Image 1 (spheres, rainbow, N blue to C red):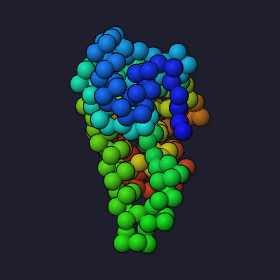
Image 2: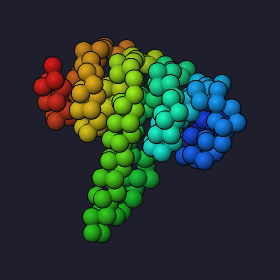
Image 3: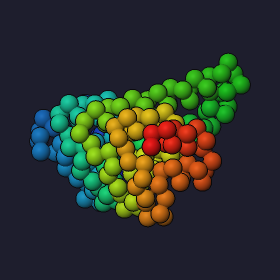
Image 4: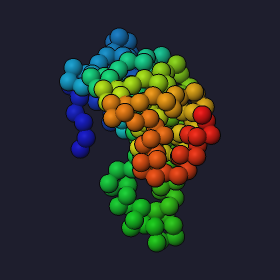
Length: 191
């Protein structure tokens, strides 16, 4: 289930198959920043969509270009900021929460992985204020997803809180509309 890419290295990156990514790059190093014809995704964007930390790390070590945009004008930063829990994650958390707080531990681990992925992407020369076709930056998506652990990382890299998307909303407007008080406080303090 998920996305099917016609570009094999994008599929391998999406599937978290670092060995296949390695072999495909050994065979043709020019595939590092190749864009899938359908979506325009590069291998690093495909890996960020799924939160595949090992593949992202490997691709960055090979100097993957973090500034390439896909057909939705999104970079890997947008997808790192959009990472959230899947339906299956929520189901597991709900079922396991009463049992020795295993659900809570699963949730914490997923959030930690998302933070590490964002730190990895931000450690390279990514355009922190890149906007997609909806006018959203990574900070807009982090606010929409109530990613209170990612927002300080983006603000630390000087993410612009005044950028308005196509709905004429700044990240602060989104946080206020969704009543995410902690995020509103973070954004106001950074201003």
